[in-house]
Amino acid sequence: MANSPQAKKRARQNERNYAINKARRSRIRTFLRRVEEAIASGDKEAAASALRTAQPELMRGVTKGVFHKNTAARKMSRLSSRVKALG
Image 1 (cartoon, rainbow, N blue to C red):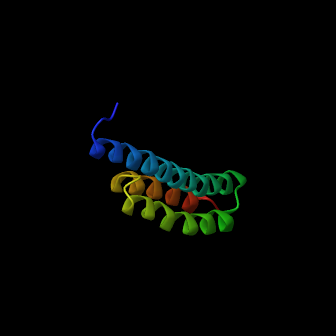
Image 2 (cartoon, rainbow, N blue to C red):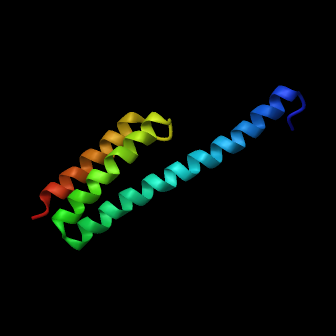
């Protein structure tokens, strides 16, 4: 258990940051799920639109430290190639 004032403050900060990061991760997954659903439905226009809205969210997650840069790049690459394959 945290005893020093500094350790208690760090514990409070960790709780707050955990909640914020969890919300960010959930929000990004929602955007990615919308792209997946559009791809599954076979609608190329909807999938491309969903991908365009998901991309800045994913990159914002990288900026905020929720995802690694390469993870986001890999996800975007795979999704964009799947959207491109529709038609």
